[in-house]
Amino acid sequence: MHDKRRGRDYRPWRGGTWGCGCTSVVVVLTVGLILSLFNVAIGAGASVRIPLAASNLTIAGSVGTKEKAPQVLPGYTRGRLGGNQNFINHTSTLTIGPAEGTVLVVLGKQDAAPIIDLHIEAR
Picture 1 (cartoon, rainbow, N blue to C red):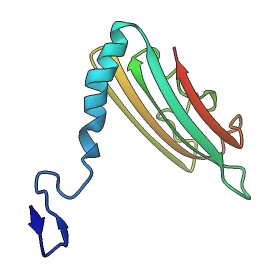
Picture 2 (picture 1 turned 180 degrees about the vertical axis):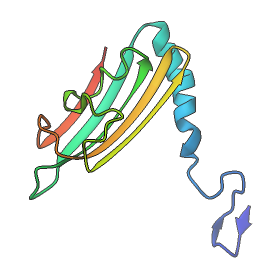
Picture 3 (picture 1 turned 135 degrees about the vertical axis):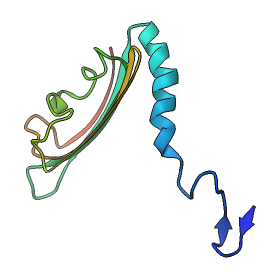
Picture 4 (picture 1 turned 90 degrees about the vertical axis):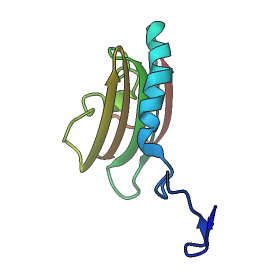
């Protein structure tokens, strides 16, 4: 279906977005529940120092069992999940049964954060 008014493919069921609104539900329902059967959580995060400032931009996420999902986030994000001590702290968590998915975006001073970091962990 091609809409000549917009000059691109028109997909009314997607509303013109990438459809990422339900992605976390699908990930937690499939990956999270499978990982919770094995009592495992996986997490990934990246952090970059803002030039000429003492602040970092950190983006991290995890999925797995409720107890382990916050633990596999990078160490310098401990205590920041749902916190308000930074300039920007965007936290999303989704819990379905024994599985939990978390997403954390932090912009601000993070004492233990290195200049550049890529963190991947399974526990």
